[in-house]
Length: 381
Image (cartoon, rainbow, N blue to C red; front, side):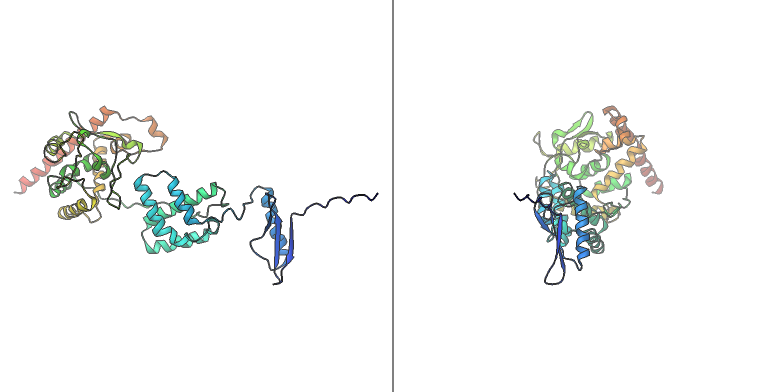
């Protein structure tokens, strides 16, 4: 009886020369399928070297199925945004950045076709075409999407590896003086003057002001309870919902010099229903960013503030006065509805009593500065 020949061990990979003269490499993938190298080689040695490196990747569990990364970036990015559960404003921002700045360069590529050199070239071109802040935001978005693709094992490594590319270099913002805040309130007119004071001495965000209702305001003590925000989208729709962060839900104690302003506004301009909006336009509808923006631009020019001074910048006045009134960093953060991940903040506290003290401190400083301004006018008369 003839002895059975031992079974030949299957080789990891093979090479063969194509009719073109170039060499092709084939190998057995971990899933048992027969795979072909994505490129051909000039020599047999080059093909064998490639097989050696691929085998090493498989043995070290570094091998990535080349077909897995063949996912269109456009489709993946849109799905990525949809699955984040973002707020309406963040969702709108991400989709705009994606549409205007990221997809024109990478929308037609698969995930595994986006390389580090391509990302560097894209960023350089964007910096020459638009503002650095927009480029930083776009880069962070691209990096986050590709980071998830890496976690999903669709690509081996995130191609976004430019140090500092996602960091925004914020410009130093102007801070309005007490006199300038008063002048802005006067220039905005009776209906909107309280909004200016709330923005400065709250300090409250525009989207928080848009969501305030009559029931949010207390006269004794003089305070405003902020529980939600209503940012306006580019479509003009108000996206009512949660505040910017959990820290945004707070009670803001106001300086007593605003009592008459708040009482007057409640009597004359707020909607009369118990749950009526605090700030509405002349025709009784929620105020629009475009209409308010035109009024703000005229008032800003009249007061002599720089063109780039935004309503949001009024918050800097509130921060400055809080600090000058003896508020700690934690006091200021609570008052402005800001959050921090620094561990040291866990051991600092700012309760309602302390917040009332901060408001009283602002009251004293504003009254003093107004008194001095009046004296200077009288002396110059």
